[in-house]
Image 1 (tube, rainbow, N blue to C red):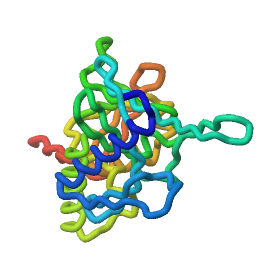
Image 2 (spheres, one colour; image 1 turned 135 degrees about the vertical axis):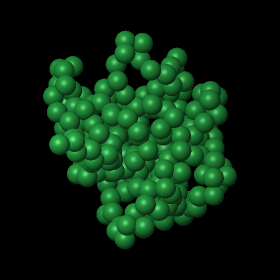
Image 3 (cartoon, rainbow, N blue to C red; image 1 turned 180 degrees about the vertical axis):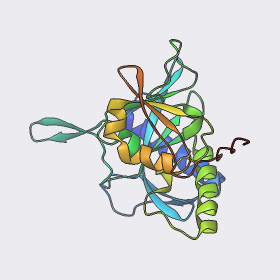
Amino acid sequence: MEDPNHKGNVAELAIATEAARLGLSVLKPLTEHERYDLVLGIAGRLLRVQCKWAKRQGDVVAVSLARNRRGPDGFIRRNYSATEIDAIGAYCADLDSCFLIPIELVDAHWAIQLRLAPARNGQRAALHFADKYRLGAVAQLAERYRGTVEAGGSNPPSSILKVDPALPSDEEVGAHLFRNHFGYYMERAAAGTEILIRRRGKPYARLGPAVLKDPPVPADE
């Protein structure tokens, strides 16, 4: 199955089927030439999703974000931005699994790799682990976050997918990636994730929630 159009169709159908199985709303644009293939309803939000075929390459799921079209002077190669879509949906036939990746991670990028296992060299910074972006896991996180927000009486203006409140441990990120996606990591921190920022491999700064998750216990006098 080498035809890119055929692969794209299979990926789109697989993602739509999995979303429907999870009880999500699945909408299809009636007009052609939209940048997104599907619209998924998650936790009360409608997300524009571009569907991609992904390949397993060893311990990673590789997702190409390039799109090509024929122009008057040959093929034109482009990627995706947050003005066009809200997320990338990826289907990996090797794993028979669907993933949903927020555009903040891939805005203007040409590819992304989702790790199935820790890096052999022990690297943690700037890695994206596949389990965190499985479609079912994202939907569950969004619903749980929605319930927390509604109980608190507030409605965040940002997309549900920008927040990942389920990470129990600190996350590490390289300074370059942190600068490019400051808004994304700021929202992660506000949701309770403590993020260690490394510069040239060394700890440089830490970003965390404004309210401590576990307030310190006063020492006995």
